[in-house]
Image (cartoon, rainbow, N blue to C red; front, side):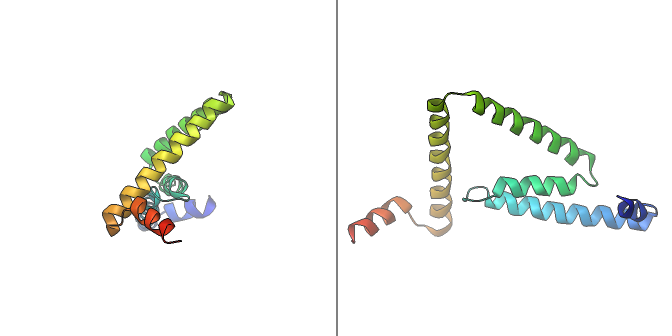
Amino acid sequence: MRVLDRIRSNSTGRLALKITVGVVGALVVAIGIVLIPFPGPGWAIVILGLAILAIEFVWAKNLLEFTKRHVQSWTHWVGRQSLPIRAVIGVVGMLFISAVVWTAVYLSMDINLVTWTLDFVRGW
């Protein structure tokens, strides 16, 4: 943190740091949001962007703490559930992600993955 303190010690450095952190953090959050519907680390990238923004912005630090608290709460709650309940949560999550991916592919590329897959399987 000494480097950041040195940068913040004058008004030009403080402004440059705030702008740089704001732009980089917002870009990382935006990329994460775009990636959320697809398999992969979309939410992790959004949280990384919030962590970057939290370096300079109190609202981002508060939102990051709120997010951490609720993710931990959810994780602990799921961990306390029986195996069948966790399986149902997993299946519902998988169905939701599948629906989001189907919608994203259909709206962006006009490809119906269900009919495309059925046609592919029938072609064997």
